[in-house]
Image (cartoon, rainbow, N blue to C red):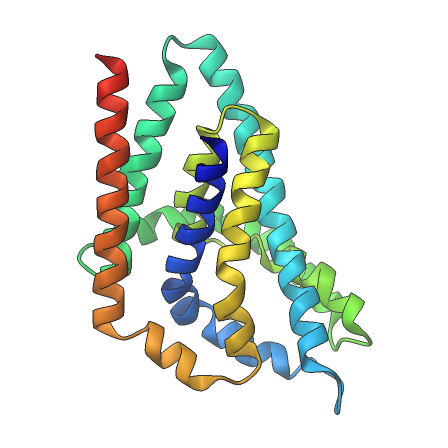
Length: 222
């Protein structure tokens, strides 16, 4: 059951890559200017993204721990949290397709924290070696993002800190392919995943997945 959730998180991360391509495309472009001339682009890209995924995993562990506390205190608390996660998955589908952009308002939640930690990232650029890209990625992993916040609701409902961390690790792995391809200069990748038809297909798949989860939860609560 949990393994399915882990791979589902990977698929959500992969599907959410269409959002990453739009939101993080500029970041990827700026990232290239911090590299030494003639450096191994893949090595820097990989360590940067490993840092980003580390932050997602840490956030997943924290939210999983909070969710565990909530579910231990409230009757059927885990079911409530899983229902919230399904609702946010629907909102994410609307967000990706462009049907409703309300999820972007949630991104403001982390704005104050981001304003505090973002200046620290400048201490690591320009990169002297690939290891400098690791803490840089860790900091940029806290960039306010509706996609990440939506995914964290699943960590909240995972039942434990370990499960929450693993879910967000899976999510981070799902976002990795598109982010790496964009950083390596595959311009067609960003253009392809930003196509309206691709967004529509991904949005519909997320809606189906969320619907199945809600039906399952309703059957459990009866």
